[in-house]
Structure formats: C-alpha cells, structure tokens
Image (tube, rainbow, N blue to C red; front, side, top):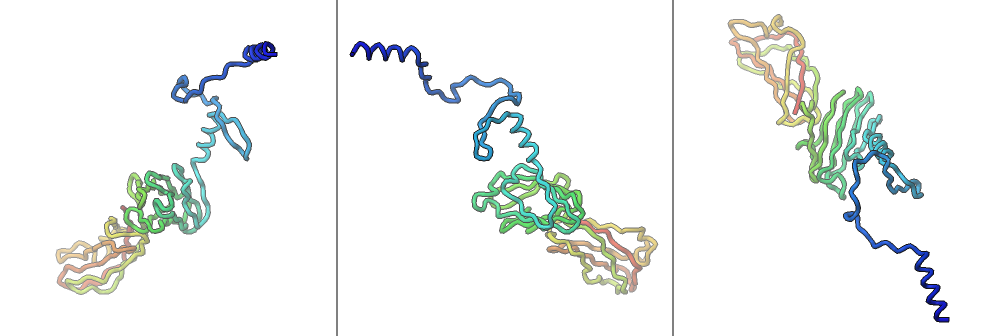
Length: 255
C-alpha cells in the first residue's frame, strides 16, 4: 500500500505544472511603446470585462468636455481636468462648492470654463473666493482656467478676464465752475477696486458742447471702480458754468 501511494504522488508531480513563484510588477519585463491594443481589467455594469488602451483613450477624450445648456449649473468635483461649456440665451448662475471642502476641489483641482452662449455666466463659489472676489464673470466667447489651492480659487485667462462692460449716457445738466457731477454709475457685478476700468466715447466728442477743445478749457471725465460698480464723474475745470451736450461712454472692467 505504501508503494502505491508513493507512486501516485510521483505521477501527480509529473502531470501538474510547477507553481510559479509570486512576482511583483517591478520584477516584470518593461513594456515597449504602447499601441492601444494592450488589455486592461475593467468592470462594466457589474461584469468583468477586458478593455483595450484605445477604448480607455476614447473614453477619456469624449469625457473631456461637459456641455451645459441650463441657466443654473453647479460645477462638480468630477469636472477635474475637463472643459465645461455654458450655452444659454439667458443669464447663467454657476456655482462651485468650497475649495477643499469635504475632500473635494482639493489643492491642484483645475477645470476650464467657456461661455458659448449669449447669456452672461456668473460663477459664485461657496465660502471660498475667486481671485479674491466673491464672483467671476464670463461674457459671450470668454473662457478661463479655474484652479483650487484647497482654500480658494484662482483663474488664468491669458489675456485678462472681462468682469463687466456696458454703456453709460452722461448727464446733460449744467456743471458749475470748479465742480464735478455726482457719480454716474454702471452696475458691474463682481467688480472690485483693484480691477481696471477702460472708458472711451462711442462717437467723436470734439463736436459736442463741453468736450470741444477751447482756450478756456473743457470738461474732464474721471472713471473709477467701487464694489460692483463703475463710477463716472464729469468735472468742470473752467471759470464758467458748462451745460454739456449728450455723449455716451463705452465702459469695460478687466482684471
């Protein structure tokens, strides 16, 4: 009986392959350049599947843009690395949670935003600030990269972000000598005092009363920002009262 058992064990050893020694990834042969045909383990709808590198690449590329068309949109932690586009004829209220809150939007989180529609996009973070302000504005065609440092958000817009723009028809009441009008204002949501305001006439002012070059002098226009507002004062530096003609300013605030 003992001889039979020994013989059986010997035969089993001959027909059974030797069990490989456990190995680690670092001990494996290095791969050559990937061509997209490599197989990866995937789980799809709860079932085991094999995926190729090409399939993974296609998914990554098609998932790189999230297009939205609503007037109310919340950025998601899963927007990391994506371009989020906004497209609506009306004003769009976009929100984003606190940077680093609950482990989301952590330091290093970044997404790109672009406004493709006619409506203005106003992005408002919860608790956090964006470039030190409570909101950031995207007008039609504008875009920016949004970064988190784990506490607040910062933008990179390349050529500067336009916070607001619009027109302002200046008052035509008489302005006494050596005085200025009270501030005439244009609402600019998100504007802060460190933003730059650009002003220009929407027509030739040298034919308009008060802005015609004279030896006696002419009116001076002063433009400055306050929170959410572009302010314009018209000052009379001459020795006589001036009643200016109608003129409109084109105003733009950038940061």
